[in-house]
Length: 213
Ligand SMILES: CCCCCCCCCCCCCC(=O)SCCNC(=O)CCNC(=O)[C@H](O)C(C)(C)COP(=O)(O)OP(=O)(O)OC[C@H]1O[C@@H](n2cnc3c(N)ncnc32)[C@H](O)[C@@H]1OP(=O)(O)O
Image 1 (cartoon, protein in one colour):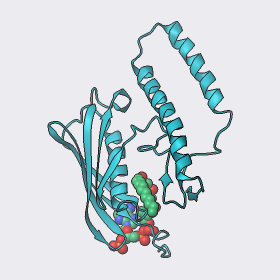
Image 2 (cartoon, rainbow, N blue to C red):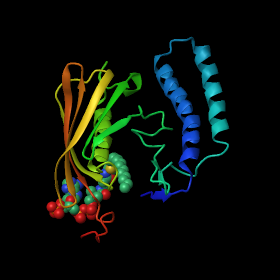
Image 3 (spheres, rainbow, N blue to C red):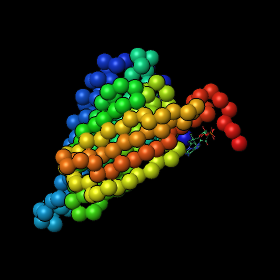
Image 4 (cartoon, protein in one colour):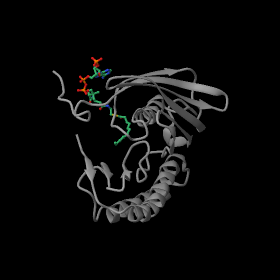
């Protein structure tokens, strides 16, 4: 497993870097959608591909040796720019902007488009699970006061989730030792489409206990 890395970048500098990288990821996100939906002639597709390959080479001129990881500074600022759900620099992430209403209750509103399709016009079930898993994990972390990992996640798909505007919500249901039960849902304007319940666990290593077994 990678690590939570302490990196002493001042928060003001992080703000500046985020203002640089956010529009880049937004542009790539737009590119994903355009790649799916374009109907331009084939020669234009090939020309666009060549331009994209040149851009990739330009960005790769200097890069990290591996994934972005999770980093934090001594001002209690944490950043996970590559995260699949909330990563500011990850064009695959919607990204979800999570509001922590209180420790143990969080929600997010998001608009999902063509790159998240499963059945026609509907959100892929795995995407629903991924978004809820992350939201529930952050909720279990009680506003980032502890580290939790998904132990078991149970999804109930009540009806198809349409692509478009959605609301996700999660709450801690109960806790017992290092185990945190979280319940969550996704809904559209007509109500709930997906429900989830999960057990999130503060790993033995994070609780300062020796792992059993
Ligand atoms: C401060 C900074 C905050 C940062 C927050 C960032 C938020 C980011 C949010 C990101 C969100 C993204 C979310 C993600 O994507 S997290 C990524 C997906 N999840 C994983 O990769 C987890 C992989 N598994 C593990 O790491 C370990 O197996 C864990 C940590 C789960 C347990 O290993 P550990 O060695 O610690 O466990 P233990 O053996 O001492 O057992 C302890 C208790 O737990 C019970 N149990 C064990 N396993 C399971 C299970 N699978 N289901 C249900 N229950 C289970 C067990 O019976 C026992 O209960 P009891 O017998 O005591 O009653």
